[in-house]
Length: 27
Image (cartoon, rainbow, N blue to C red; front, side):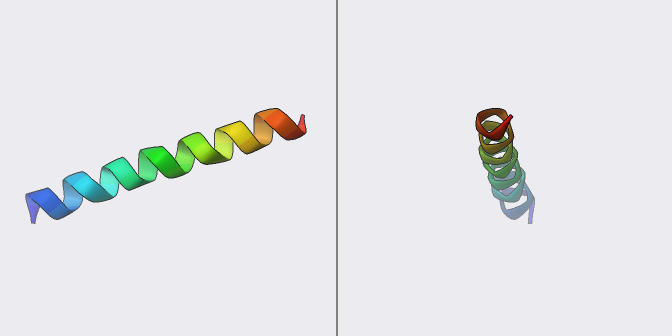
């Protein structure tokens, strides 16, 4: 369970990084 939560938090960070890049490029 801890491993699953850990990997999902990494996925969230990668997702947020992608969103940040897109919003930076469009502004």
